[in-house]
Image 1: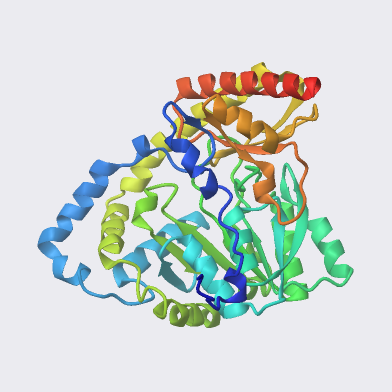
Image 2: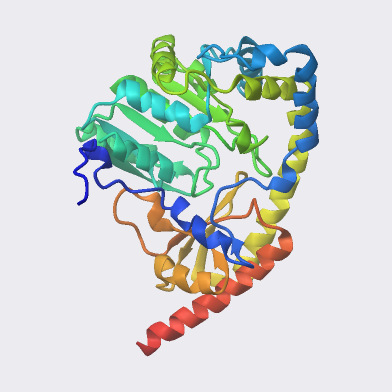
Amino acid sequence: MTAAYRFNPAFETPQGSPIRELFKYTQQPGMISFAGGYPAPSLFDAAGLARSAATLLDSAAAACLQYGATEGTAVLTQTLKQLTSERIGGADPGELIVTTGSQQGFELLLRILLQAGDCVAIERPCYPAAIQALRLAHADLLEIPGDAQGMDTDALEAALQAGARPKMLYLVPTFANPTGATLPLARRRHLLSLAVRYQFIVVEDDPYGELRFSGQAEPPLLQVAQEIDGASDWLVYLSSLSKTVAPGLRIGWMCGPAEILRRAVIAKQTGDLCTAPWMQMVAARYLQAGCLQAHLPTIIATYRERCRIMLASLKEAFGDSLHLIAPEGGMFIWASWKDGTDATALLQQAVRHNVMYVPGSAFYASAADAGHWRLSFANAQPEDIVEGVARLKKAQQEWKAAKSAA
C-alpha cells in the first residue's frame, strides 16, 4: 500500500528543472551538448585556487573549519564589497551578505518577501530556475515581453498603468539568460524610475556581467540606482563567482537595503547556517591575490572565439531560416526558426545525432513560440561547435523530411 504523505501543496506535483531533465542525455557516448549553461572546466584556474587553498593550511585552517557568521566571513565580505565597488564605478555598494550561490540569494528573497498570490514580474523569456522557484512560492507571474535589447520597459509601464501591481521584478539585465540581450541605459533608468513610482523591488541578477567580449559596457542597475532618487531603496543586487571562477565554490552575494538583508540573514540561519567558511576563505584569498582579474581576459577571449564560431556555423548551416541574437558577452545564443521548425520536436531527432540544446519552451511561464531555442557556446571546443552544428543540420533535414512524409 502506498503511504498517504501530506506534502506542501507546492510539492504535490512539482515540476523539476527542464534543463536538469536533459542532463541524462549528456551521458551518451559522443554527445555534443550546447544545453547546460556551464562554464568551461578547462578555463577553471585550478592552480590559482590550489595556491589560495594551500595558504589556509598554515595560517587559518582552524578558523575556516569552524562555523562562520551567517552573513559571511568578514574578509570575504570586504573583498566582495571592493569587487562590487569596482563594477559600479567606485561607488559604495552598501550592505552585503554572502550566499551559497546567487540562487540562494533569490530563494531567500522569496521567503522573506512573498506570500502566495503575490505578483512578480519577470522577463519573457526568463531564466528557468527563477520561474521554478516562483511557482513553488505560489507567485502570480506577470511576463513582460522583451526583444534584442532585453525587457521592454514601455510594456512594463503599460501593464502598471493598466493596474498590475507586482511586489517584485526579477531580471538579468546584462547578457540575459536565455537571450544574451543587454538592457540599454535608457531602459535601465526607466525601469528604476518605475520601481520608485510603483514601489516594487527590482532583483538584478548579474552572473555574466564580467564576461563582455564586444560592444559598450552598460552600468549595473546597482550603479544606475544611485543616480535616481529613492531607487536604491527598491533594488537588490545578486551576483556570484560561479561563471567567472568556479561554480563548485558555491560563492554568491547579495547587496540591498539593510532591512531586507537583515531578514535574509535570519532566513539563511534556518537553512545552511552559513556558507562554507573554507570556500569563503579560498575565494577571498583568490580575489585578494588578483587572480580573477588576471584570468578574466583568458575566459573572455575564449568565449569570444567560441561565440564567433557558433554564430558563423549556424548562419552557414541554416541561412535565413534561422534568426539569431548575437550576444556581446555571457554564454548563450538565442535562436528562432523562421521556417516552421518546432524546436521541442526537433530535439529528439538531434539527440539521436548526439547533439543537444534547450528548447525555448523551458524559458516561458506560459505558452511560447515553438521555434525558439537556446545554445551555449561556453563549454564546447571549437571543433565540437562546428561538428555539433553539422549534426543539427542533419537532424533538421531528417525531421523536415519525416514531417513532410507524415
